[in-house]
Length: 95
Image (cartoon, rainbow, N blue to C red; front, top):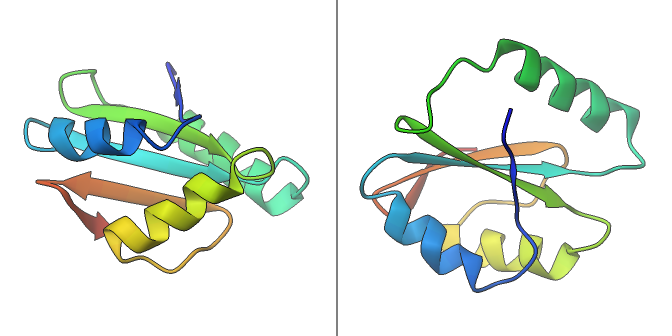
């Protein structure tokens, strides 16, 4: 799986723009949480999308909590961990 590291807020605008052409997923992961690690492994095991169908972003919550807060505000989703947010046409359609 080819995760795109989500490390700065400017990438959120790219996520919004790219979601007009395909689905974009953001996986919010806490590296200290065993439940989050399990969810990540299950998602990676079951992942079966091409790059044309879905663009996957990975957010390390411990290092980038500020970006998680901005995601919650920008896409109107409540923060959770682990959390998978799917964006299409600039809006969160799944959390």
